Length: 308
Image (cartoon, rainbow, N blue to C red; front, side, top):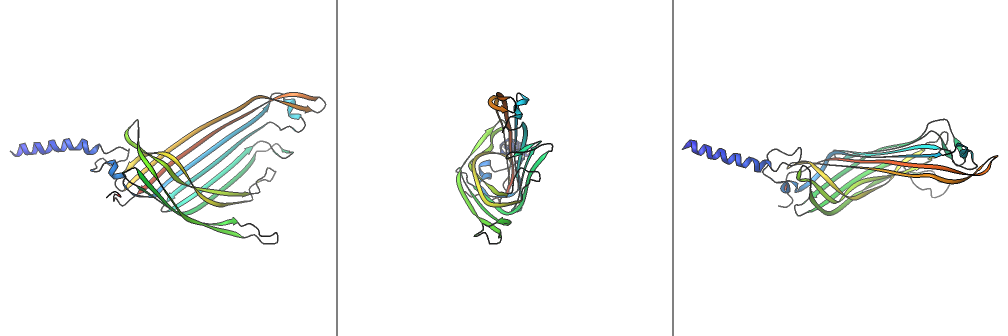
């Protein structure tokens, strides 16, 4: 009799394990959980760690089909130029570190009518700021969610407008406030199975704008002053992969890549060549770009459902 009871209990456990482990969806989900993903997602989630990285690289090139055309009066020289823009946010313990870099490289360039040849020109900007930043994401099982954000940044280099030409420059500005947004979400599937991702119809994200003074193409050219002059929030639909979903921890990931290409092939220009008069010239302009975005966001909660 005891052997029979042990066999029945063992069979019940074996039948229960596939059901319990079926709640594991993400790569780092718990192996065993008595709660479904619908139940585990319901909570007030606070952003604890993570990062967001953005890269935009643009390449331009202009070439004359006939080299004599470059000697034309008032015509631009052949050139190559690469512009690289990077933005990153690193989140840790209610702090967001913002880093923005921009660099232009060009073997030769123009400033008005002045051509500066023979050197690798670099025009660069680098801004690093720490922002007091708290991001709360409340998700309900009925398909709604609420984002509530608080932020605070004191910008030492912010330049206030001059009331008159005789006034001395005044620096310093505090950017602080709250931002609230409510919208809908739903599960998404991928090749790994159901409920592998979650789509937010609008996902508020931090945007900082900069003010640049003195950017110019000259021999000594550089940015003279760089400062933050505004904090806003973007709000775009996004699909996040649920890499991890436990009762008190959640990890969201997303990536986006775009390539662009444009070309004006053998465009015709009438050029005045000294000593030769006007002649028809052809030039080709080529543009290509690469854009990438990567999100890795870790959230924590107290494990209490907001639907109870």
